[in-house]
Amino acid sequence: MKNITLSRFLIEEQRDKNLIPADLRLLIEVVARACKAISIAIGKGGLADVLGGAGSDNVQGEAQKKLDVISNEILLEANEWGGHLAAMASEEMELPHPIPNRYPKGEYLLLFDPLDGSSNIDVNVSIGTIFSVLRCPEGAEANEQAFLQPGNQQLCAGYAVYGPTTLLVLTLGDGVNVFTLDREMGSFVLTQRNVRIPEDTKEFAINASNQRFWEPPVQRYIGEMVAGKEGPRGQDFNMRWVASMVADVHRILSRGGIFLYPLDSKTKAKGGKLRLMYEANPMALIVEQAGGKATDGHRRLLDIQPTGLHQRVPVILGSKNEVERVTAYHAG
Ligand code: AHM
Ligand code: MG
Image (cartoon, rainbow, N blue to C red; front, side):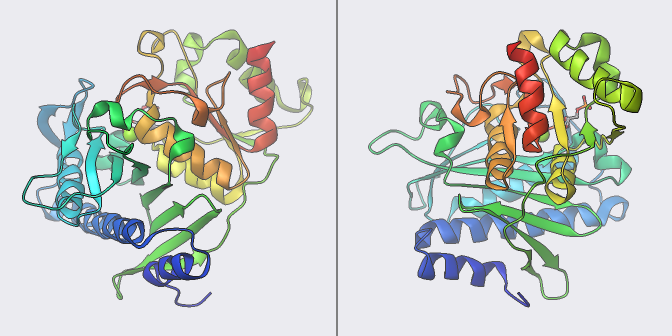
């Protein structure tokens, strides 16, 4: 597996397995290049003027950090001119970003959360970029409607984690592979092939400060875990919460676990906390491709028909048997 760069990996997927067409391969390479640029910007931290608030709010009414804005710009600029895209949509922008008329247009739609884990940006904790690719319906205008496809239509999804190392995790719908950024070479190199999430786990991730807002099924599920050996599950569980979805999902991909941002009375009116198109769907595809499961407590996340670009959903994902258990508690 030595020295298989992302470019080589993608060319081989295209040539040997006929998994992806050439223009999708180029699109993924451009997204990866943008992630490298974001990684470099983040790495400068206090040495450059990149930390702190941008003094603006995004469409969701959340205060933007400078790096949210910088990362969004990097992704837009990198992907505008290549000719692969019909349009882009970002967590940070109210409307889809059309491809300017001076550039050729392609058939794909790119969606991204340019910098996920905003509360961790200024404290030097892992953050990431999440992305997803859909096909623009034939003959359709690349407007908001064109993006409203269920997650099972994603052609590819991935995330970059900017942590002690910068990683790119990618699925083309045929398993999940992990690439590590070789900073000297400037390229992503394949370091884990076909990652699998263990079906069982003793580790859960949830923001426990929201406990009083949770609904009964989640109260029961987490309550049983916290009760440990003396409780109905008869074993101890461990808890982790980074508050960067990319970092929490990456831990689950690496050693198993369950992640919950469930529906609670605080976020109920909005439908949940996390966004279906930029967070839930790409992560659900990756988790399922690694043998895990992803639901909103009731339904498979990937089967939800979106009704809005910035729609929010409850998210429960990770080790299969635990996701099945908490989903069953919702049904009961
Ligand atoms: P963001 O896209 O504005 O960064 O928000 C999403 C993040 C997720 O990465 C993380 O799982 C969650 O919000 C943390 O929320 P909380 O601060 O409520 O624990
Ligand atoms: Mg986010």
